Structure formats: C-alpha cells, structure tokens
Length: 306
Image (cartoon, rainbow, N blue to C red):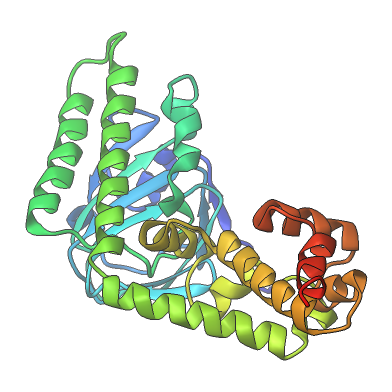
C-alpha cells in the first residue's frame, strides 16, 4: 500500500505536543516548550501543517527542515517565525534542537488587538533562512519575555490570563520587529550591494525584452532572482532606502519610460507595451502619479525645445 504523502494537519497544540512526547499544555491555546525536552527522533509524519503560530529561539543544531520552498539547517541558530498553514518537512534530525518555542493558536488573540496587528509583522512571511540573529543584550530581552509567558502559564487561570498572555506575545513581536530593523541597518554593505543587484535584475528584465513577452516584473519575480522572500526583501529595502520592492520597480519603469519618450519615435501606446503594460491607460496613470505629468506633456517638453 502506497504511503500517504499528504501533510498532516495539527489543528490543536495538545495533539502536536502529544506526538512530540511532551506533556499536555498548561493552556490549550498557548504553550512554551523547552526544545531539549523533545526526543531526537524522526517525526511520525514526513511533512506537517500547523494551524497555529510557532516562534522559536534555537541556539544551534544539526537538524535540517524544509519550510516553504527552502531547506534550512539550524547550526547558526536564531529567532524563527512560522505562520499557520505552512508546510514543514523534517529532512534530518540527528541532533536535539536546543532552545525554546512558543505555540500560539489564533483563537487566543482573536478578540485582542493583536488579532489584527499580527498580520502586520512581515517576518511571519519570511523564509526560514532569514532568521533574526540576536545580540547578547537582545537575547536577554527575548528570553526574558519567553520566561514571562511561561510564568503566566503556571499561574492560576483567571479573567486576566488571556489578555496578559496576548500582551506578552505582542511585546515579544514588537521587540522582534525592532531587532529586525536593526539587523537590516547593521548590514549596510550587504544592503548597498543588494540595491545594485536589484538594479541589474530590473535592467536585464527590460533590456532583454522580457517585459513585452511576460508583462510587468512582479515583486515575487525580483525577490526570487535575489534569493529572498518577497516580504523580507521589501522590508529590508524600505529600511535602507525608504522604498519597498514595488516602488523600486515603478521607479525603474518611469526611468526607462522617460528615456523612451525623450529619445524614440515610439507612440505612447508602444512605450506602454514595451514596458509590459497590458493597457496604455494603466501606463498613463502610473506615469502621471510618479512624474506629476502625463507622458504626452513630458514628451512635448522635449519637442518644444528649439
């Protein structure tokens, strides 16, 4: 009989911990787990999907997993964020993971401000290879919040419990957001090189005629060429340049459009099609928005010069 290759869905934290040979969680919707307590063995399923958030601080391991489309080993450690409904595949597990994890079910924060705010934390959409690497001081803050959440879980459940737990998690995510911004800023040399690489990707796309054949370059296309997740690339660019990936694409479009309008005999429609627009009206709208004038008026400003 052929083995079922479909990922197994864990809807509850309790079931997930039971399959990891861990005790029943103290709260059904949130749990703090010491990774040293998990047996180093192959998981009973080849791939799984969690219906809850997972935040892990890992200090180092030879374990390797596939998350999304990428493989990642944990030897360098870091802070990792996994959102619900993502496929996770264990590839190699010869060593115990060392660190700590929080499992957070969306039901805990559904009626808390974090319920909506959590969508704004872009790092839940980052590739697992884009982990947050903490300084010793930052590590103290993050681990301190893990301990506060754990301490609250060991307190008697009352009317304040759910709000306090959600608030501690929100604080943990806010600090993580701050530290990711710091990580972007402290890698200025890498980021400067990234902007140059981005320019090259866009130049190759337009110069090679891909725009006319395939349409406008997408954020997913650009991020894939640069080996980043779409959200990580946009957040890093925004921190360094003040503009996200889509804005950089638009800037390149307008730059090339201005060159074509001022130096070629192509009609406005032909310029639009060459840049990858399906409809000239869309090109006109974007050009006017970015250049504060229409393509026609921009072109006339050159032809009127004698």
